Length: 179
Image 1 (cartoon, rainbow, N blue to C red):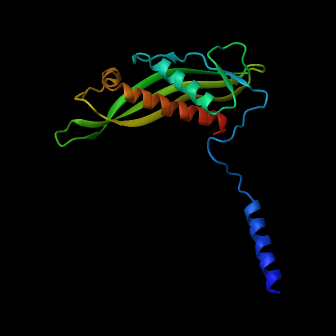
Image 2: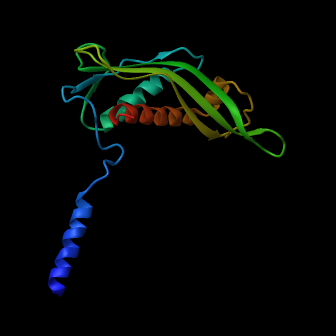
Image 3: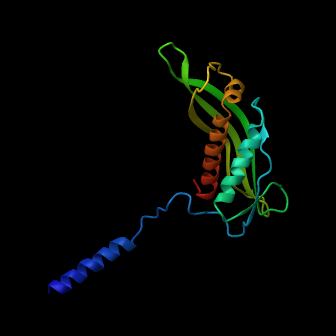
């Protein structure tokens, strides 16, 4: 009788564990059609005054896609199964916190971009965001207090790399994980 009760508990435990709620680990799945094997990511357009932001963002997006390991990523817009295009439309910088002397100690940077991901065979847009905004905060590492993104990024190039990496991660996750 005790043995039968133990087996019932084990069976109930297996039943509970085998039922799932539909969630999966982020970064592990893909909801893209199986026909997509190669993705073209040409250089993003830059409509800001921040020098080379398009190069850094494009490289980080390509690296993030390659890091997912399922797709061949090419810098061309032709001869691919899907195409990811982007335009960086704005970068703004504003103080996020101040010192006791009323000088900015942290800045928030907001990058706005137009992103489109489409299947080339059908022309069907699989994912797009006409005004994707990404924001991040950075410590001011030098005496720069200007609110000009160029002045900030010229002083702290690591900030631009961090912004590009985080933006790329967000874009690729949104595309591959259907969010």
